[in-house]
Length: 63
Image (cartoon, rainbow, N blue to C red):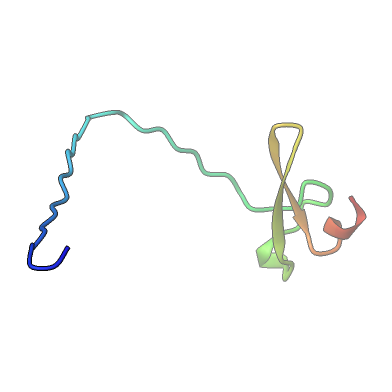
């Protein structure tokens, strides 16, 4: 369309809700041997049967 200038606009509707958020913290250690970062191992998380399991660099290749 020549000669006709088109304009566009973006509208955003922002809602802030006050919800109580829960979080948890756990020690990062291997599910098999219990060793972690402080022992010089790297840790990898894997989801197994709807649960997150942590493995060290030694035990991760074995599962």
